[in-house]
Amino acid sequence: MNIRILIIEDQPIYVDGLTTAIQADENLEVVGTAGNGQEALDFLARREVDVAMLDVNMPVMNGLEAAPLILERYPHVEVIMLTVYDDAAMIMKFLDLNVGGYVLKDSRSKEIREAIHTVHKGGTYYGIEVMKTITAAMRDKRNSQKTMNLSPREYEILKLVIKEYTTQEIAQKLFISKETVDTHRKNIRDKMGVRNTAGMVREALRKGWITEIDL
Image 1 (cartoon, helix red, strand yellow):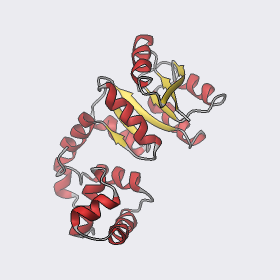
Image 2: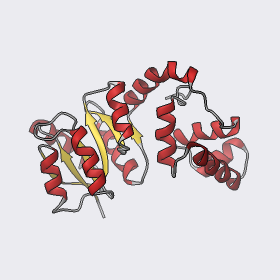
Image 3: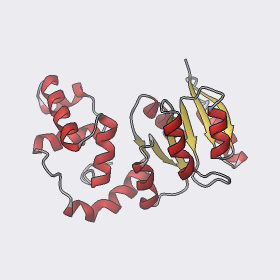
Image 4: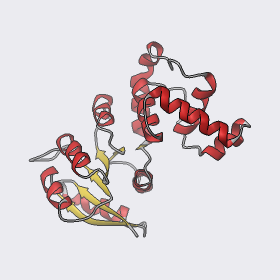
């Protein structure tokens, strides 16, 4: 079944272009559009949606107001923020809301489609430029917030996880067993106080632990 997408954006010209870009992938289907957060909530009450592409600046109810309501009322819906803002403070606000992704509006069509597929699979997607903004803002913070009680091996594995290496790929790269990787990943989650890979990525972003990773 196709991934069903709701575009929440108040600029019709951009909606048209985004719809065309998304539906270039035969596995993606735009099932509706909304001009603000309230219209989006009304739509979600009537139709099944897998991924919501949510603009930040909108009338009536903006993205910052709408995102937590969508996530609370429709936990099966993944939210991707799609915006012109690459401001670190704004990005961190949405990180704290646990949205699935944050992509700039001028991103390439391929990146937008990749973001949809990633969050639909339960992953977290922050565009290349967004990641650069975060790492730049967190560079000073890194010096005061080290990796706390993560061992060197755990930190090494965390960096590979953030780079989207699979357990098998990590095992091959580090010449250890898959079982050992799984054990390390569990220990990392426990130490970071998170439940899954997406949580590991978000927490690492917040703490500025990814600034040494080549983007």
